[in-house]
Length: 460
Image (tube, rainbow, N blue to C red; front, side, top):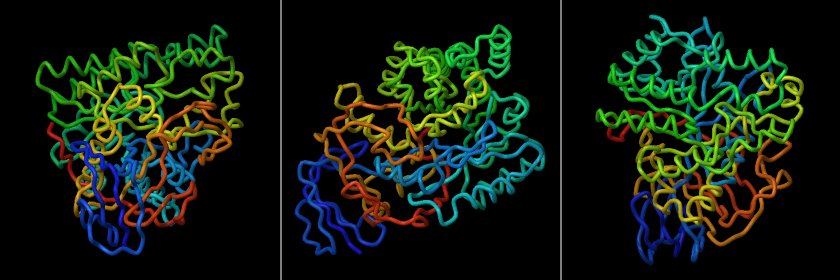
């Protein structure tokens, strides 16, 4: 199968030009003006943008949490991602405390085998670090192509490791060419605030937010950066939400340190006022919580300053019935937010069209930097000869409205109901096959491939 995409405005992290793109098999074979290649399929992209498929490095599909499971599995989640222009996701494997990394890997392989529509990879969450797990970390990097290791500074008793374990993990990961990522919030402070609010009978979703003040994230982000500096390990902070945490990383640059930072689309466009909507605020209960308007300003600035490299989603949807588990106690509301389908279009409307970021920066933070940081570049994250033919043809003028009635995620509400956008994913190509056209998915479950990853290619 060959495809010729003609007359598109090609956008990469570095370039902006008019060209044709010829795809044969799974790869991009030629790029140029008026290409003479005969193709099985010709797509006219005149007046459209063509950019590399989005990469969302922070999703939770079919994940066990708080006595239930996230409602999107590998089929519905990766298909919804494709509808929004995201062709590749990285999910999180969760080690069970007291068990092995290999057993956790087998569990997630069963979740994804023959089910993924789009391409995917894994981060390995280390929740119980010891000498045996250290050997498994090396095996994950060398044999499985899993080169990033998630840690939690919160959720004591289930996911959290202590600072001593964190430092020892960093030493092993650094020695073997991997990367440590972190949920950076001060779990002890948060647990104490949750207990206090519950004891005082303050049980609405607003107190989820008030139990995780900005200082809990700022302190943990700085502490993580200090441990990275001590060990020399490369590190990445997931879902950063606030100015205080960003300033902790800005401070680290004064000692010539580089820490990679991800924020998520919801933290750039939504704010904590949503928690005042009585129990309806449960739709936006996630950790860390939504913050203030001043934090949105800081994060957009951080993107342009190069302090924030990636915009993901932390997609972890729960249906309304699941959210109702916490109707009488905010601490029992499953934490998570459906966002995988809307990231690219939200970033275009709220970022590019509003003048906050350039088109090149848009591609950089939604695709290219994730490919570089997580060891997939230049196979993924760019439009170049030899790269996977993961391409999005995007109509920058098309107006549409987000709604539960039209989204493809397996969740019965939208966190963005009625949100009007300008700019829509029109056609998506994944490894040389048309995945999305005319708002229909053309690929079957099982087409998505597991992508082995190497070392980061961004300068640290």
